Image 1: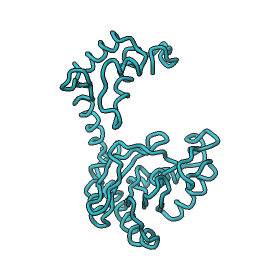
Image 2 (image 1 turned 90 degrees about the vertical axis):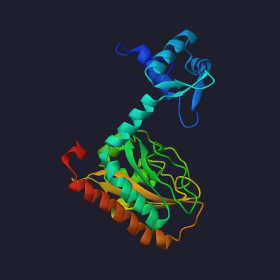
Image 3 (image 1 turned 60 degrees about the vertical axis):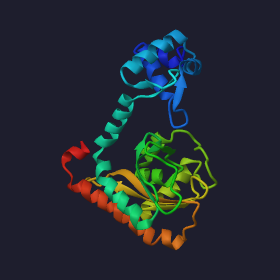
Image 4 (image 1 turned 30 degrees about the vertical axis):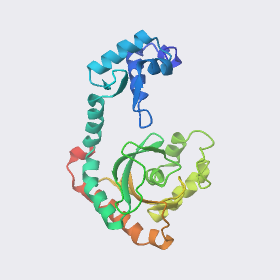
Length: 268
């Protein structure tokens, strides 16, 4: 977002707040630190404006200045609030020991993700100990339609809900297996509903095999998905549809069972 972005013309927008949030949005896994001139260039903002914004964000703890005094990185206030948000999702607290046990039982990386718009966001991860672990981390996002985790979360959505989620006629292709239309996606979702789980081999990323299952709350609503993944390792199809699938389904059922018994605050 720049100072002249159409979004900032909304009379209810607070430009300085929007600019400050735009600065924070520049940082990520591939851009851990930035200098003031780099930020000014990326956002097309005057350097004086950037200086004031950086000073404010640093004073509030949302950014911190690196040892060289020139680079800035995300500060403890922002990181702390992110972890507080994740910790507030009691679903994660329930799921973590079960996912850890699933990792130990199968020897494969175990994860949980929730839906955020048209993406799944990974909120828990336990990397494999004896094989090459998956490269995803907590906070990693993937497109819903192109991943089995995403399909598990939306597999029981109504036609109306799916049409609202995927308004365009075509969906982005990532591999030869990616559904590129809502009609094609619905075919896969129908198969997912019938099975109660989903299996993929190089579905989203070459060399990655995955078995995923939905997680339901006390009301039976799908609130998340879990999976196990193997990277650059062939897994026999009978194992994926056999003991590995059974392990994932058992873990998802155990998480759901705890959510059924959990206090009402977990679902508030």
